[in-house]
Length: 96
Image (cartoon, rainbow, N blue to C red):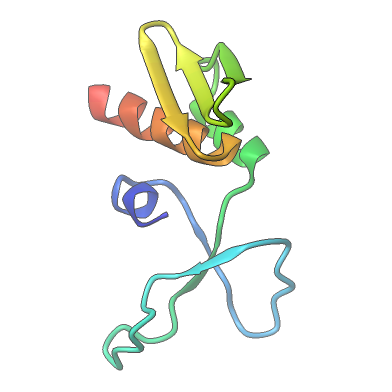
C-alpha cells in the first residue's frame, strides 16, 4: 500500500464519521504526532484493475497458490490477486 501511495495511486483518506467499505491502511502506525491520523481506504481488486485500464490482459493463479497479473511482457506476481495487480500497476507506472 505504501509503494502504491508513493507512486501516486489515489488513496481515499478515512475521515471521522466515514463508513469504511473494507480494509484500511494506516500510513502512520507509529503514531508520530506530526503525521497525524493517516488512515486510508485500501483499493479493492476491481479498483486496482480499473486503474490499470486496458493494460491488463490476464489474471491467473498458478499451482502454488500465487497469482499473476499479465500485460504483454509484464508478469507481476503476488500472494493475492490484489497484490499481483498492484505490482502490475506499479510496474506500468515505472515504465512511463
